[in-house]
Amino acid sequence: MKLYRADQVRGFDRQTIEEMGISGLVLMENAGVAATELFCAHFRAVFPGAVVVLAGKGNNGGDGYVMARHLHNRGWQVTTLVLAEEKAVGGDAAVNLRALTACGGTVTFCPHEASLDQALVRINARVIIDALFGTGLTSPVRDHYARAIDWINRSGLPVFSVDIPSGIDATSGRVLGAAVKAKETVTFAVGKIGQVLAPGCEYAGRLHVVDIGIPPKVIDREEGAVFVEAADVAALFPARPFAGHKGTFGHLVVVGGSTGKSGAAAMTAEGALRSGAGLVTVGCPASIHDILEIKLTEAMTVPLPDAAGSLDLRAYDDIKRLWLHKQALALGPGLGLSEGGAALAGCIVRDCPLPLVIDADGINALCDQKDLLTVRPVGTTVLTPHPGEMARLTGMSVNEIEADRVRVAGDFAKKYGAVLVLKGARTVIASPEGDLFVNSTGNPGLATGGMGDVLTGVIAGLIAQGLSPLNAAVLGTFWHGRAADDLGQILGNAGLTATDLLRQLPLTRHQLLT
Image (cartoon, rainbow, N blue to C red; front, side, top):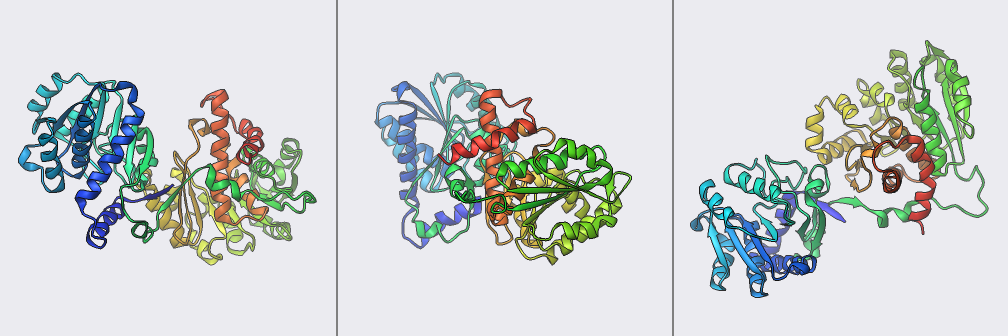
């Protein structure tokens, strides 16, 4: 599913009206009719039960008035509460409000808290239709609108939101003061980014996209983000030819590990093997080499010169020899935060001819030398920061990053020529060319140590098998999250470990390909 920003969606409406000659009234009627059909399909068991429509004075309210009219004409018991004075409703919304009353619809105007409270006391509904605010909302919800949203959420009734749950920012997914929690959301023409990003996705319930007559040629003018689902990734899995051997499926180098962090490098190596990589070699500090030899049965290990349990520049010549004739390098898991480790990471980023996947301490090491990323060929580096690492990398606060994840990821990827995987609830993947992806998989079970190391290994292992860094990031992130979702169906979303996920990865791959 393609996703678009709020300003892009407004542009689609404007171009359709001004350039294509399709009036706003036609679009509003189409939206209301499509929403009515979906509503009736999902709530047929309630018919002809009482329905309350809470509507604003703008176009979202107008869509609600169209729904109210058609539901009334079909025999539903519909009450419409307009949270404004009648004279405040203008444009196409006013036309449809008049049509609703002309058809005999019950309408009550509630322009302030007192009138709203009086109306809500008399409501005895089975379903609520939320048509208060649409994708144009940019400021916090206040006054009687906030009161209406609070009543909706406390009612315990199923809620059907029109276009977007009222109070959700259509671009960022942020809650603007207060927001409706819907069971079903019908959205018009295209998906909106804020409907699938957290926390907006928690408010939208099941999301349905319906056609309202905006011509495809209008939509195709704009680049949207992709909401990555199973159908998008199945074709990305590397082929497994019958005559293939371990050399066919690539050799990955992992550089990382330090005293107390040997598990990070081990998890990355095992993630790569579970991704299908033929061979994995871990370059680690000599002082923890024996530990990794025990942890890793299938991967090879190479002891490297270290200082006090961490790698530094003394290991660089050995690492250069190590990457010869390999296909990819994963840098950073468990590397540590020493100055020597940061200097080593900078040299690897500057000089390594292989595609790189950089995570964890590798990202931290780049905070003061991220311009080295621009020395590398565009699109050959993947960074996989969580929001805290992204904050250190950019100098922004975590709150600033979380408030606009898609923009932050996209800007960084373009500026530094790298593929960025901004982890979190609904991970965002951005390419230097402007491609944007929002991952649909994953659950709170991933919030435990080692899960990010496994993801690094999966992405790096896919690159070693021949995928482009961008495709590896998209597939690896989806696959990793889907494995957690599959485990969640059995074990729940608490208490999962990275080891559990490693075991699940091949089974999830098999299920995605059958």
